[in-house]
Length: 58
Image (cartoon, one colour):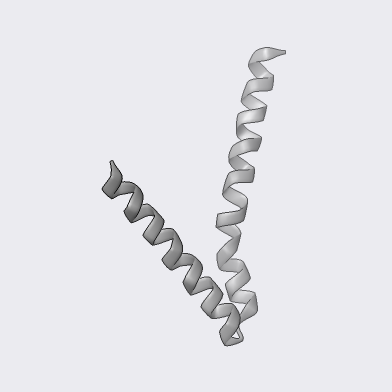
């Protein structure tokens, strides 16, 4: 279990490093577009959770 979490953390940090590298290299648009899945995934997941909770509790 610990190995899997370390691997996921390493992959996330590598992805962030690539995105920040693109932003610093002068390709800000591509860097920001690459970051959108990291920003939107938790928001969409929360929205889905809230909609399902609301459907079953109201």
